[in-house]
Image 1 (cartoon, rainbow, N blue to C red):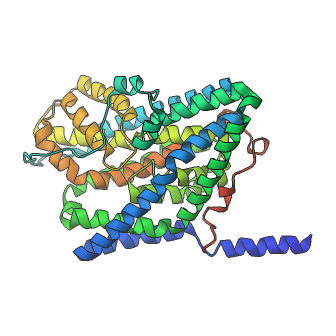
Image 2: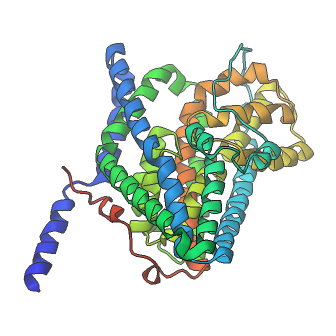
Image 3: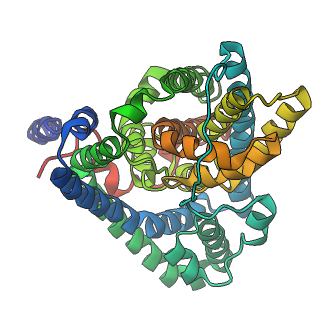
Length: 432
């Protein structure tokens, strides 16, 4: 017995030799500096590698989300309880998004951002994921062709399809057992592949951030620096106060421990600018580090990656207020309330992919009476820098809500299904 304990202890020490969080941070910092000084030939190489890394993550996102959600519903073993988790998640996300939108409207006015700035007109083509309003989103919730939903990466449709399949399997019981076993097997395979991808995540983040820095350059970093500093300070305060408060008072969990445990997901989100691509890592952090039950994580996190856009709401409000001041457009209280309401609704349809906020901003600007053709080029020039922090905060928000639901819905991890094999993949993942 003592020998087994000793062997387990030795194995644990071996695994601690490879700290994923530390190496992701090193990759992030290294990528920033290398991106500012590297030659074009190196950019071409790193750009290819970053695309390969992103594709490797995306490869397993949708099968993993679909399978984990179906298995989560089977684990809950109750149709009413599944609906309860989904409803509570959406209410939390809607509430935090409203707070974020209001904060983004108030802070720039307090700091008088945009006063004295001059915005030059530019001809701009928006190259971003297609954005649909709330009505379009509701109309297309159920996929007419589930395979198309997977090939096009329509996360909302995949979630709805997974819920339909999960509920049906739950209702059919033993008759659906073969399908459930198949989905369970695919889920395990997906988790295993993601666990191996995690080992190269630090280098993937290095390549992604280096390519971003090279593309934007020093001039873009300096341009609108005041806005970016204020924006990132707002990000930090919002995450610490709002998410820290949610985790502490609603989740009854240590905020310090929470933020430390979710660092791999947050750093990966910062480097990749994609909450969807970060989903596998977020699932790992929630389930295997913060003890969030699979049943909650498998539903709340994919849903959050799709509809929870707190930081995007902050960016939208920030930029609307900044450009209104720079263009001499007066934002009345009524207009601000309208912008806030539309911001919350628009965020539901904002894709969780790089550049997804551009189309949302293009839709929101006219509502505030801003000249889109004049300001859109400037917004796009800083979108990536704003999007890195926004994606990081959004992922934190998804995980904070999952942590809160763990307590408010009275889920005890020990009473639920056994943790999947991906538990091996965390800060202490073994280097191969």
